Amino acid sequence: MTGTVRKGRARRALRRAGWAAAFLLGLILLAPVAAWAWWQPEPKARGTATNALWARHQWVGEPHTDAEYREFADLLKVNRITDVYFHAGPFEADGTVPPEKYRYAGALTTAMEKYAPDVRTQAYLGQIRVVDGEGIIQIDDPGVRARILRTDEIFLDLGFDGIHYDLEPIYPDDRAFLDLLDATRELTRERDALLSVALEQPTLADAAQPVYDALLPRNGTLRHPARPTEDFLRDVAGKVDQVAIMTYDVSLPTRSLAGWHFARHTTATLELIGDRTTVFIGVPTYRPPVMPWAEDLEVALRGVRRGIDRLDRPPARPYGVGVYAAWTTSADEWALYRASWLPPETEKVGG
Image (cartoon, rainbow, N blue to C red; front, side, top):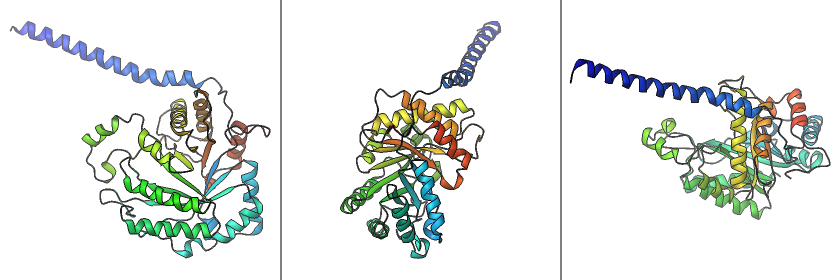
C-alpha cells in the first residue's frame, strides 16, 4: 500500500469522524432549543386540591404556642395542604427513635386536630439504609424491622394519622424494604391510618440499570442511582396509600430542560401508578446547589402542569404536588403556588 493511499484513507476517516462529531454536537445543541420551544405555551391543566408538605423536626421536638399552631394550621388551609409529613426521626440504627426527640409530638397532634382537623398528619421517619456495608440502618435484619414497627405504633398512639417512610437509598431489588411495607401496612390498616413513602424519581429507562451495574462497582455511592424501575414502583404502589416522588434536584442547565424533567416524571408516574395510589410530585422551594438558576418552584409547577396536559385521562386516585419544604417556602412562593397551581375553590381537581 502506498503512502498516498494510506493518507487518503486517513483523510476520509478523519472526515467521517468530523461529520459524526458534528452530528452529535448538533443533537446536543438541538435539545435545549427543542425544549425551549416546547416550554413556551402556557399549560392548560389546572393544579389540584390534594397536596402534601414536608415539615421540620421542631414541630415535634420543641414547644410551640397556641398562636403558632393556629398560624400553621391557617397556612395549611389557605394553601389546601391535605397531608403534612412532620419530621419525627431519624431512626437510630436499631429502629428506635429516642423519646426526647419527639417530646412535643402529642401537643402537635392535639393542636392539629383542633385547628386543622381535615389535614392528615403523618410521622416522617427515615434514615440512611445500609447498602453494601455502608449506611446506618440495616432493614435486612428482622429485629430492626420489628423495632421500626414498634416505633410506628408509638407515633400512631401519639395521634398521628399515618407513617411516612423516607429510607434512602432504596434499590429496585430491595426485598427487605418491600417486607417492611407489608408489615407496616398491616399495622396502619389495623389503626385506620395511612402509609406513605418518599421515593427517588424513577429511571428514565429501566434497561439502563444493568448497564450501570456492569460499568460501576456495587459498593456504596459508586453503584447505579437508587431509582425505582417500573415493576418496583408498581409493587410499592400496591402496598401503600401514597407515594411522594422526590423529583427535585434536577441538575439540568436551563429552565426549559428542568421543566421538561418535571413534566416527563409527572406523566410517566401518573400513568404508571396513578390508578393504584395517591401520587405527590415533589416540587422544591429552595435553590439546589447545582445549576440553581434552572430549578425553582415556578419551573416545577409549570412542568407538573405540562405533564398533566400530556395524560390521556386523569388518574383514578387523587394526585397533587408535595412541597419541599415548609421551612424553605417564603410568603412570595406560597402566593405563586396559589396563583399557578391551586384550582378555584369550586373545583376539586385530583382530590
